[in-house]
Image (cartoon, rainbow, N blue to C red; front, side):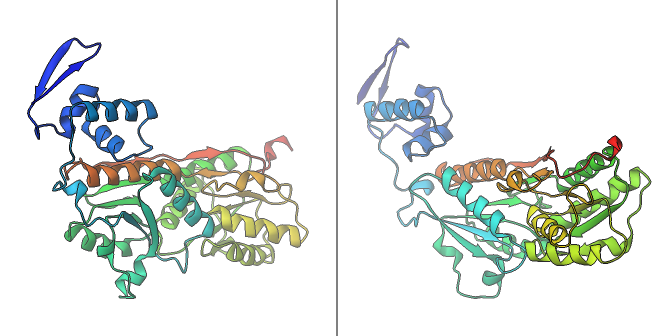
Length: 353
């Protein structure tokens, strides 16, 4: 039997050997059992002072991890699979880099990441999901649903991020692309713009669908229309933004403002204007989407929508760790996070003319 006196609390507890659990430590430390599990696994999601306090309590009461518990099963690989819809088309290098950097920063140091394509798995190109302790799906399209169903059906810990899914039995964090696009286009309208162009993203991606709908809804509410010659379909990559902006500029109907459905295409489109002698924003203004790290350093700095990628990744990784470390009783969480308009100087104030 162990006898523990909690200093500063003023009471004594007696524990039979083997009776101490994570929940016992949580009670004594006045924290959740999730926090205890993270702390004992070295997660940086827990403050250093809290980790130290929990470690001291665990040592004091003789806590021995239950190696039969699901969260500490012996054949763990400590590898997390991060799956995008398709790495060959549509997934920009900037988005991929941001996701991987934030995921690696948030994960406990004992874990590693493996980036993969859902298309490769579904086409049986040699990626075995059984090699992973858990799966993070950065879903971009409804075509991912079959893969999500499969992972869930085999009981592999799973979180789905980026796209809102139509089911309530899987943890899911996403953002409101429709609202972000609508709000930023309304900002341009308030700045006096009435003649718009649009460079869309990948047709099969939900983000492009929602951003396009937000764009057209803003115009509709202000009784504005866009010429079909000024609406182009891109692929989220800079090259397509450049090519399609050249087509818009050669149409004979140059818009005062172009909404590009991601920052990468905006970069290409702005370069096309510069190459052809158009001034930005004096001749053509630009709006992007995502607020990638480079957007503030463009010339001019890009007005865009800050997609809450960092927040979504942090929440998703924390939830996946809950599933892995808390004996499977982590609750399912679903949340849609609103984006934020970032106003810089790529949109000319035409009201001042």
